[in-house]
Each structure stands twice: as C-alpha cells, then as structure tokens.
Length: 106
Image 1 (cartoon, rainbow, N blue to C red):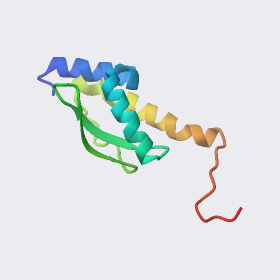
Image 2: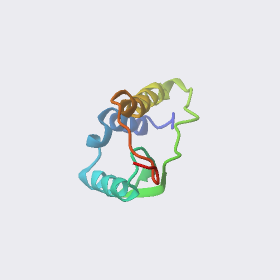
Image 3: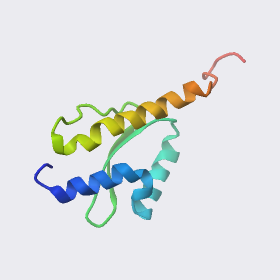
Image 4: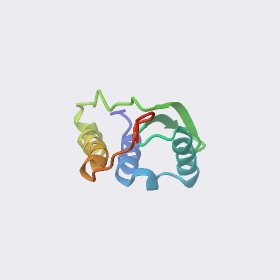
C-alpha cells in the first residue's frame, strides 16, 4: 500500500471519520450487519468495491488488530486504532455495566 498514496489518504480519512466517513450505502450495510450479529464488540473484515458496495470477508467477536504495520507511512492506523478499541472495551467496565450471564441465577 505504500506505493499507493491515494489509498493511504482514503484509509486515513476513513479511520479519522469513523463510520460517518463512509457513504450512506456502506454505513447502512455495516449497521445491518452489526444488528444481525448482536454483539457488543465485533470486528468486521471487509473491502470497499469500486462501485461502493461492501465485500464482506468475515465478521465475528474474535477479530484483532495485529500485526499492525511498522511502516512509517502507515503509522496513522496503528496507535489510533488500538487506542479507540481500548477505550471502547474499557468503557463498560468503567461505567459499571454488568450483564447477567446466560443461565445465571437472578
């Protein structure tokens, strides 16, 4: 990707703008997918096709960010992505959100 500055700029814009940076059609697809999976946290591995549609590779609760590239041109993607994920994972703990386990006695 280092040889494609246009792709880097587009990815940088999408990371910075989060879901609001995507076209409405893409946002709707990702929101429908998230609603169907019904997990608090999930990863969606996808690509944007030239016509704007989403090509889904996988979506599940066991996604990770690693390995994060150490290439200097891609530094924008590493630390910010990890910081955002860590904040999202820490938020329910800090807010004291507890959900009953399935099958747990009330």
